[in-house]
Length: 131
Image (tube, helix red, strand yellow):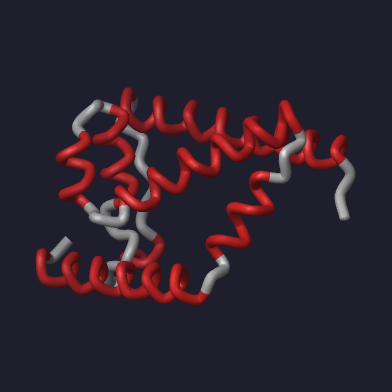
């Protein structure tokens, strides 16, 4: 079992990763740089996450409706990221073990089943739209 200091250190490292992600999002919004889709490059097909990068770029431009319509997975992912961020802050500054609790909730079989169904539905919807 991790000590309180270990939990705080891990949470602070995670906060640093969030910072790098925010910097990358800002770079995507304000530059023409884009990450190529590995699935389209290798298999010439879309994946369930197709459009997620564009969704987060749209959110960075404050177009939240466009972000959700680009890929519906944006909504649960962004909500999960905000909750995880709050858990990280609680762990970093109070040693609350919030990440451990959040991860145990996410490992519930019904949460996993719902996530898989949502991912498959998103994949099918993207396929129909031709994204």
